[in-house]
Image (cartoon, rainbow, N blue to C red; front, side, top):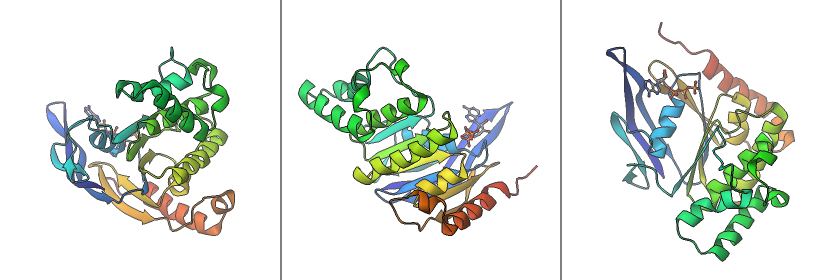
Length: 253
Ligand SMILES: Nc1ncnc2c1ncn2[C@@H]1O[C@H](COP(=O)(O)OP(=O)(O)OP(=O)(O)O)[C@@H](O)[C@H]1O
């Protein structure tokens, strides 16, 4: 379980203080898929960095299974927009990387890597270098690599931001497919309202100045999420609601 308890983050700005996160509280149950959506600058990345242990809060705390986050940890896998694959390593070696540093024996490493490479549909590319892959494929490698070390939580910050619209839809379906087979708690930041609704069982809407949560919307659409669901009136209703919460915010001048 993740508990975000009155988290505040203040950055120094031109001799004053800039409140990137005001007072953010949220609880996430195990194996939930929560998306965070909000306008630029509302603190989404700051919140993810705090959960990842890459930033420390100025106030409040983030807890994972009751333990305060004090740095990066193997139970939290991180996937950001930049693919961050090692260009000189093959897909297989990239996926095995975290296992190698954890001292997992070679045969077991290979077995685990093969499982997740298969799960993201890249069997044929296991021995390819990243430069031979499309952007979408690289991001699937990043997902396989994050999964390989068996984190209970996946933190994803705009992971599909750099791919075209059609690839993006395919990646969403593929991620849900992976998640349905290997349930984890997922926190997923996006700018895209459709993406936020399609993936999540809850959408967290944030606003800026100060960064804060303005609404949490339950997405009571069944999984697996199919194209029929994406085109359904129920989806459109939820999408419109999230859209309204994101784009009709009162922001102080
Ligand atoms: N290291 C820093 N120093 C000073 N200000 C920062 C720092 N990091 C973030 N900020 C400020 O905090 C605010 C929140 O930034 P953050 O990147 O978390 O927003 P975001 O919602 O992820 O935005 P975007 O959607 O554009 O990525 C921004 O106004 C940003 O300028």
